[in-house]
Length: 173
Image (tube, rainbow, N blue to C red; front, side, top):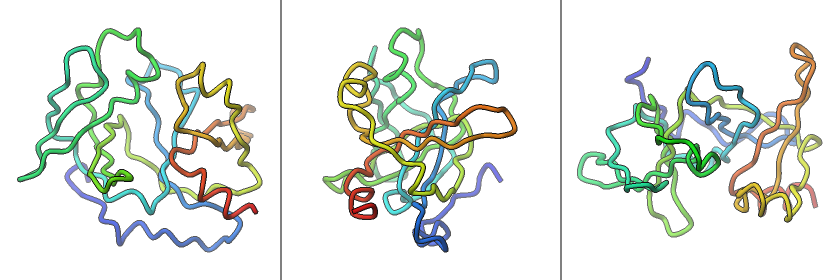
């Protein structure tokens, strides 16, 4: 299972429920002892595939790295270091890399510690994130979040929706 890639055709962007967004959800937790407070989601349309993470050459003290994928170099972004800049290390041993295309059609990779989950998020659970919070929390690229109740743990699950502002606005207008 760990060596299996998940091709784009297997992650259909169509959902049975027209009142939901089909996304790939992942966390940034480094270890089992870290408390996961927030999850992140990418629209399935932007995800090329999920692969076993190759070795990444990290820029010294930075969030960006470079991974070799066959004959291509892929820029990687350590979101854990972006959100937790005081941590001493970047995620070095992520088992998975989520590959996606940027706006400029370049491939980019996000290392994640667990296998991302394909999910349909109801539009009714999505709300905008205030600009002031986005600036303070360094999440200016996530204009919306979904808050889903988790009856098992009696609390809410917060999912920041990355790169979906236009998609959400067109579906809720």
